[in-house]
Amino acid sequence: SQQGEEDPQALSIQEGENATMNCSYKTSINNLQWYRQNSGRGLVHLILIRSNEREKHSGRLRVTLDTSKKSSSLLITASRAADTASYFCATSGNQFYFGTGTSLTVIP
Amino acid sequence: KAGVTQTPRYLIKTRGQQVTLSCSPISGHRSVSWYQQTPGQGLQFLFEYFSETQRNKGNFPGRFSGRQFSNSRSEMNVSTLELGDSALYLCASSLVTSGAPGGNEQFFGPGTRLTVL
Image (cartoon, rainbow over all chains, first blue to last red; front, side, top):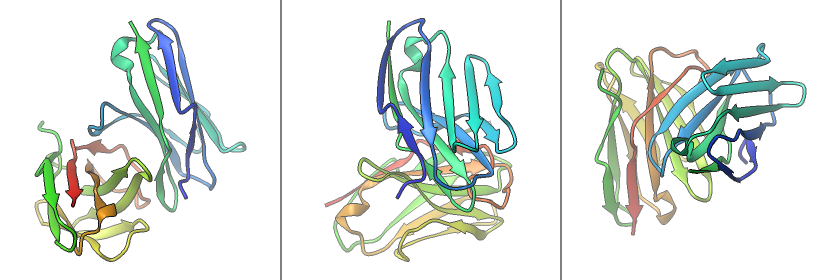
């Protein structure tokens, strides 16, 4: 079974709003990463947060990690139509697992 | 720098055949990983190669194999194809390996879409 489960499966927001996606995982990890995928193409790495970090920022992205709850969240602020994509969390530990993904649609 | 390239981009095979996919990493990157993406199973890690050695392996049958050459280019082979092998196969490269699968930032290629009839 997959390590990561993401919530929600799909999200639709207006341009300018914030988007929050959550990821839960099952086992201990070294780090957790977030990726973006446009229309079944290759993935683009967004951000990596290590197990000893609690929060990380990159531009309009904010990632939090709670290892006690085995969960992470990705916040995209001031969303743009170009942010429309599928977003995946991925956990690196003894194995490398991707989550099920959240499909984000940003309406202009 | 040129990104990760994968060839071919599209491939159609029939059950029982075998297939070889190719991946050229970003120049200077020595770690190459392979992933399978299907609508049912999502993204799954196949294996990682570093300095021509397989460093990590996912939970796939032995029909899936790979290798890496001295120039870091990698090939993935699937023998005795099954209908369920139809998928997008993604290759990713990273500068080094952390030892743990997916331990570093990875740069993905556009993928090879394999259809098994």
